[in-house]
Length: 87
Image (tube, rainbow, N blue to C red):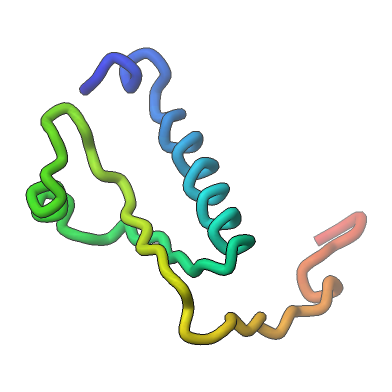
């Protein structure tokens, strides 16, 4: 366990999530597509990408030009999930 994890707990994961979200939103703004992948063989990916000792892969973010634009899902009405004064 590295010093940052010991001293600050797992807050680096929160910060990493914010950084990844910002990267993906910026890519979208530039017309690029992304997907955040966290479920993969981390040891094999480190080997293939030649990640040096002391570094850990947390997520992979493929980046490219999408074949077609995204479609937004149908949104639920706010009354379906917002509650006032009581549940």
